[in-house]
Length: 420
Ligand code: HAM
Image 1 (cartoon, rainbow, N blue to C red):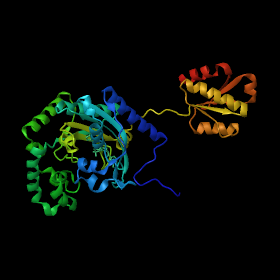
Image 2 (image 1 turned 180 degrees about the vertical axis):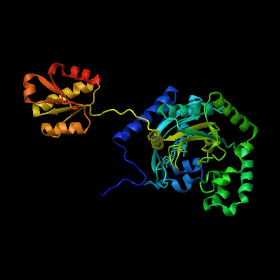
Image 3 (image 1 turned 90 degrees about the vertical axis):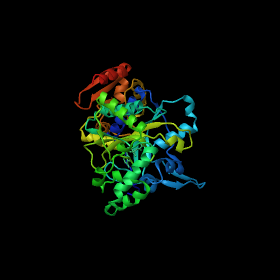
Image 4 (image 1 turned 135 degrees about the vertical axis):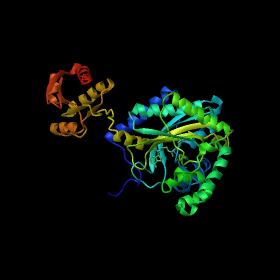
């Protein structure tokens, strides 16, 4: 083989497609039933947008972005995530004129130069939404409910919602100092990444996989929250408790993107390996101001489609799969072919999926192909059938066949197929 797909990317086809359609359609349905509108932003953006939003010191900006110069010398980056583009689009298109409590969902590819492994790709796909305007914990509550509804509606049960509050810039200042003091005492024992982050992005020490035991005893962000952040977090938990949404408070949860404030959450699935986060999100009350707008509170989440599919498979959940080659029309000769195309049109109009032979094969070859593609029925038309004004309908599973008057063929076949 001369050409191969790029490492960390996938071709998606066959049965796999039905998993994708299932996840995407379920997500769209959940969003639209909650009145959330779709937004589509470009796949590439100015590099600076992600540097400013995701954060100069984040792993994404430091080592994972697909950045290149276009022919005019501009620095362009394939989007590593969907939040910053939505905020940019909101500001650029003056969507603020529509008032607040606006919600937008998206489905699409994201790109990160990470080391590929199970559940970790370089082109992966997210479903997500962003809620723009509300400061109240009612919004955080509603967001978590919708994420939970989406995962339940897919049929998933073996996941846990991890929750934390990392406060606002005011309380985070004190928290950072407490972490500096704590980690300062063990600095020599930490991995190289942690040593670097100690200076640049100390919160990220909490989710280091290597030095995790230190994180368990580290100061907790919830103990350093200012009054309003504490009240916000308390109210959110009250709402979740009242509604009996299960969650675990996770003091080591800080997330890898720098724009978060207050609520952060991650959904982890027990059937996956190291890459067990199937969704994550939180508040980013400072991002609008950071990107040049006025100060607008906002929050959102994204789920990874590939990982959600791994979770569906781990739980053995059955996915509805349609047979795209339901009826196969086998024809012999030019005239029969033209009639076959005509009949295919009549059946397709009735909503059936119909394939017509276009390979000029012998009848046996046509029927073999129909079976291989999973067709349940074949319609056979040759000179004799044309002369008699009939078509033959063969059930490829049982081998039974009937002759049908050509004038009623479309009605008969549509009715027969609908009974299966
Ligand atoms: P994130 O946690 O970086 O958050 O990504 C969200 C989800 O995307 C992860 O939980 C995971 O399922 C999936 N994911 C991330 N990286 C990969 C990868 N390399 N391969 C496969 N799946 C991956 C965000 O992107 C935020 N924009 C979420 C958000 C929206 N926060 C507020 N609004």
